[in-house]
Image (cartoon, rainbow over all chains, first blue to last red; front, side, top):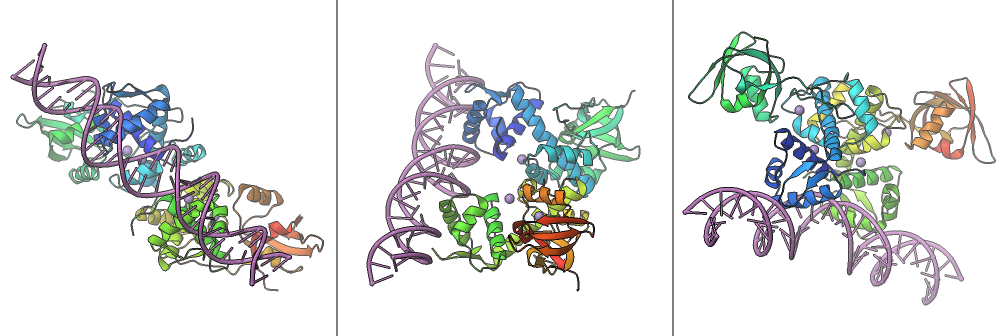
Length: 223
Length: 223
DNA sequence: ATTTAATTTTAGCCTAATCTAAAAAAAGTA
DNA sequence: TACTTTTTTTAGATTAGGCTAAAATTAAAT
Ligand SMILES: [Mn+2]
Ligand SMILES: [Mn+2]
Ligand SMILES: [Mn+2]
Ligand SMILES: [Mn+2]
């Protein structure tokens, strides 16, 4: 129950995000690659997190979060996303500049601070990348989402989130006119490379690669 | 020139504040007592700070800040005080609740963040305790100040700052009606214990101890 | 001027978080 | 199945920051 270090919090968050991908166990190497550290360091840390009952861990068998670990991760994610909203809404940062700053601010753990910040921001439900902000009990409001890459040609929808918060990706989206809330129609799917021809907001036609379309989440319009 | 750790930043700030008291050297024990750590730990850290040319240090001779150390300390203090303003002005914290939170937020060192925050707050010149906020070059705007304890009976002034940010002290000030900006007249000085009889805002009479009056700064009214 | 007391530094130990290299276990392949 | 490759863990170091106890230095007091 005692306070976690920034390193421990980053590990928990990484495990949470990997588990989000669907599988119910994550491997040492996956964690190492996500947080850019050695597998040996991950092994060490997993022992500590298991000791604190934040993860389920049996050697060589991969890890998952305990109830407590899941709840803790959601609190960290809550702080991260609230600060992201603050940086964009109040300090006028763009969505590709906030990642590293929020990555630090998230570790300032003062319950009253988080509640006041939430209130000050008007209890936002989604962060600037369209990701849901857990409430103080760890509850997520989720929108029905589908990857743009899985939308059939002819269908249209609204962009609700992005799966990747790297500056390179987000700056590219700015350039092609994609933003959270934009209307998008899939005009055509190119067989050759899986790329898509899109119509943004009913006016701008663009082609995006398969990799890009896999990292954009949309809510389908009833068709 | 590389980034400092939170611990190093806290030491620098402590040395800065001790030097503010007037003397031009501070001792190992003074630092240890201010940051609540052992003298041995301070000795260790002083070696590291000297190595990085942030302090002037000769064994057994006390320390002072180099030009670089002074500048660095002022940047940390700038962040601390800007966050304090944010917490009080925007998140509606009271001045006795912000110390520990700002103590953590000050270590998030992203130049653009600090500039945007400053701008967002309207470039405040003083923090909620009346302390001046350095600009981005480390320049302080100072008001002419005198300790309330040194104000002669019969004189009056305006409260501009407090020397102590402990919750205990600040809550006491709230209780007796003392706040930054209040008008204060020294009605009488009690010989027995050095306490003062004050008139706050021309209406409330209170007695404060010598210790309290030494921790309140006023700007004298022309008399 | 000695002796005593206080201050400061060093020595040695500890925990957290990282690394590389080696060993162990699991998974894949012939 | 037996061999090979990949993954994971352990072993052994390192750096940062802290501690206590002992030694060294400076300051204070006979
Ligand atoms: Mn982080
Ligand atoms: Mn985000
Ligand atoms: Mn601090
Ligand atoms: Mn202050």
